[in-house]
Structures are given as C-alpha cells and as structure tokens.
Image (tube, rainbow, N blue to C red; front, side):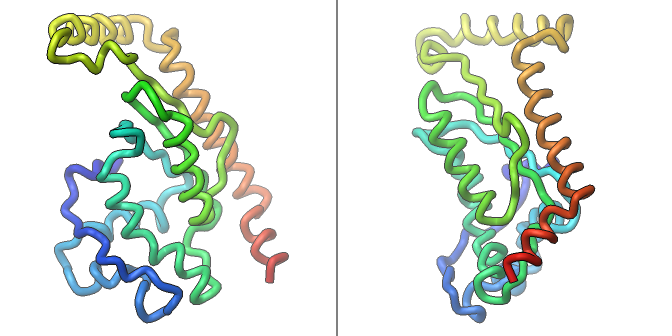
Amino acid sequence: MIKLRDLEFNHCEGYYSKNAKVCIFPCSISERDSEDQMIQIYEKIILWADVVLIATPIRWGSASSLYYKMIQRMNGVQNQTVTHNRDPIRDKVAAFIITEGQDNVQHVAGELMAFWSQLGCVFGKFPFIDWTRGWYAEDTENNYDAMTSSLNENANTLKVENKNSKMHKDLIKTIHGAFEMALLLKRNKYDQNILDKSK
C-alpha cells in the first residue's frame, strides 16, 4: 500500500507535450532529483501491480489534491504510447474507493476511470465503491461529538459484524471484480491481442 501523504515528490512542471524529448518516462523530475519518491509509484504501478486500487476522498467535488499531484506526474507514462508506440501499463485492472463528500461521486468515479483507461487499464464488474456519512456529517462545528461517537459505534459494530456490514460487502464485490478481471486478462492475453491487432 502506498500512502501519498507519506511520500515526498515534486509537482509536475508542465512539460506535457507530444515531443518525446519534453515529457519523458521516467519523468525528468525523477531523473534529476534522486530524492523524488514518485519513482516508487512508477515501480509499484507499472512493474509490480496487477490491480491498481485507488482510494480518495472527495474534496470540493473532485478527487484529492494529492491524487492529482500524482497523476499529473504520470503524463510521461501515457505519453509513451504517443511518442514511442509503447504501452508501459499492460494487463492491469483499476478499481476505486471514493469516500466522504455528499455530492459528485459519479463525477469523481468518471474522472478516475477516464484517466486510468487512458493509461491502458481496464475495469472489472462494479469498478468503484463509494461511501459517505451524508451531508449532516459535514457540520463538524456543531456535531463533532455526536459524529465521533457514531464513528466509534460503527467501528465497534464492524469489528463484531465485519463481513455482514454493507460497506464491507460492497468493498469485497469491487475487489473481487477487479481480481477476476485481472485473471481473465492474464489467461487470455487480452492486452497483447488488442495491441497486436492495432499495429
């Protein structure tokens, strides 16, 4: 698991271009700054993962700023298809966990799906799960005590019921869908067949 808040990586410097010498992969920022930890994200997503499971809260109707900071640094990955006819993301499935924020779940899910599909990922059945405490939970100035005690009750209930909770069942459904799709991709060489036919 990668927690973006624990990594130190620089912002995209806006070099995105169809010019192969401008927006490269690995990102030129990682190439010149050995302390830039974006390289860990590249390694885990491109070299290691079969399923990429992204979790983000909703902030002002969009995914978190840390999420956007990360994906802007992945422009060079997507640009490989345009500049070198290479596809660094192969046979990978993406799925999403979206939390908080009463509104815009479908909007955020759509944005996430659009970006990860452009990288070459595919999606299983039920590719995202969303969970919100509702509009009332955002009034923390007036209901903080009630909200935290409710959260504690829910946490205790989850420990006892765990697999019976609706949230847990939905999460398992999304994860199973992603893993089933990943297995189908590997067994059927789906990605390789699509790429071979498009050449």
